[in-house]
Image (cartoon, rainbow over all chains, first blue to last red; front, side, top):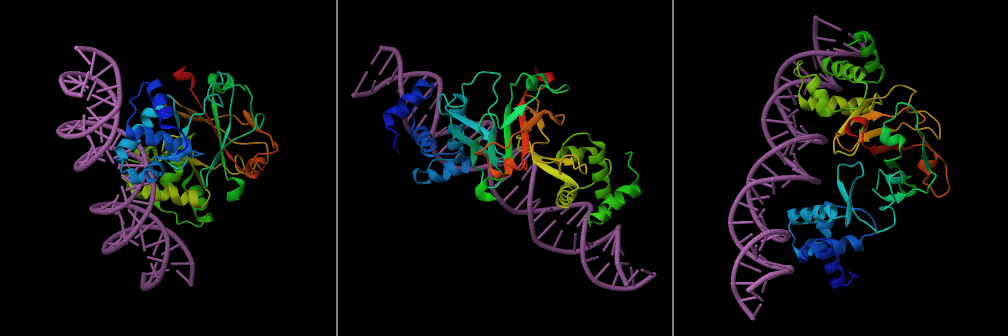
Length: 146
Length: 146
DNA sequence: GTCGCAAAAGCAACTCGGATGCGCGAGCCC
DNA sequence: GGGCTCGCGCATCCGAGTTGCTTTTGCGAC
């Protein structure tokens, strides 16, 4: 809970959302988390406050809609939400590919170095692929999970 | 239904599974399909035969366990099963991968041609990545969805 | 300050894919 | 062919995600 409440509030307001208690808590939770969290994770972390499951879920969806969070599927049938750090990967224009490495065991997500994955404009591939307008996800076991 | 029944049977037996009618049907269905199928897809295709949902599910799980199929999650919270063509995808060395292209609009899934995506054993990447023991997922819009 | 409206919270119920417990029937080894 | 075991079918459960509806509340306007 390091981020000042007023700052959180203004971020919500700027995004066109009302600054409600649950949204502040959810956003703060996402900021505090260093990695992607599942809906259940967030619920658990906010358990003390007694927010409803549906409320948390809608909060996460709302925050995703306005671009404060990013929702991703890491392959274990759970939605994961991650803070969108402005500038890092998000606002690279079309044409760039930014691969993520996803651990299939622990769910950890890491950004792979540029150049780790290259795509070739082979014949038969979809146009979006040849144009590089794609998102690359690499699944495997991270070093911790052997 | 091109594959001879006896061949299917022996493939099951070799894998250590009993050659039951439902398993033969499921395996045949997977062979006939050119791409990944969801559990629901397989059920629908075998609807005439009247197999139970749970049976089909267990068959798919069994076939996956013994290595005849591969189970993957392509991001829409549905398990997809795909025939493991012996040698083709699985035991290719480092640098080669079997990428799936997932349309983020219509959900269509296609296998990209081999060589469309290559990975480099860059420093800092997880060991599994450098060993090529990863699953690559490319997300974007397919040609039909612009 | 307080009024009013629309947005959002809370509650509960629902959907749907996936998983499981159990008894009967079928496959396979001998 | 006999019998043991595996697998099918049926029903049921489970859990993540979703929705309808009523009450509450944020917030701009007065």
